[in-house]
Amino acid sequence: METINIKPNQLKLGGSYDKLFEWGKYPKPFEFNDEVAKVFDNMVSRSVPLYHEVNHSLVEWAYYYCQGGGKVYDIGCSTGTTLLALAQQIKEKTKFVGIDTSSSMLDQAREKLAKIPKQHDLQLLCENALSVDYSEATMVIMNYTLQFIEVIHRRTLLEKVFAGLEKGGVLFLSEKVRSKVPQIQEMLTRSYENFKFHRGYSVNEIERKKEALDQVLVPLSMEEQMTLISEVGFSACEPIMRWNNFVTYVAIK
Ligand SMILES: C[S@@+](CC[C@H](N)C(=O)[O-])C[C@H]1O[C@@H](n2cnc3c(N)ncnc32)[C@H](O)[C@@H]1O
Image: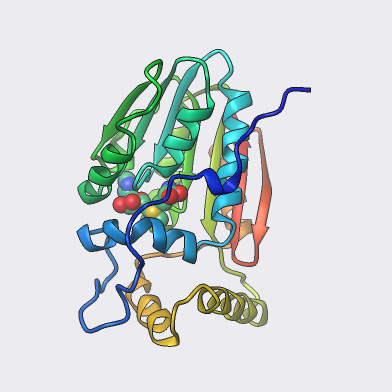
């Protein structure tokens, strides 16, 4: 049996402690600007349940799917945490393409990825995911990014990803979801707010960020997402991880 050796706490997370929503001025509506980029690693690890576990699982999928090399796209790569973890584990020459609309995020990513192993190619594109060509993709990663794309454009993006993936290629997708059942949705929200509270965010910070994200981060239900994935043509799609209102899926072309 072949095993890979990456521990969740090996993720290279930098940045300052996130206190952005505590005081007077904060990004409202929420945007991935310079201030957010500087605290993003801390923000994401304290705001996204299972963040480390998802990245660990992703590295495993990439390790097995990219044997013999390949082309991996990370849509919404932010500060490059995922790309770095992948580049350090995959031995074969691989082409990594990180895509993000935020130049502030890509500045952080460039710094973090400056020392990736030499055998790999790396390209960081400051572009809208909707205008990128995903041809020859072995794997496309979209962690917590589709939820920020206008709902009417999500199908088009998934169609583009599907068209670009090689047959047998994999989409690794993580999203915040909502329940269509009001009582369940209420409990999902409560649990999530508790999660953040226990990671050092005050009630005030939680409320302000929620206001800022309203209409910016728009979650779909798990059923809606799986229908969309199957309708664009993926032959299989399964949720491989879930924490209340956060789900990770893999879909195979
Ligand atoms: C929550 S972050 C993603 C986190 C990252 N994937 C991770 O796991 O650490 C969402 C990212 O998507 C980017 N983004 C939002 N809309 C985008 C679009 N239309 N095209 C490309 N990137 C986009 C944002 O700038 C932001 O960096």
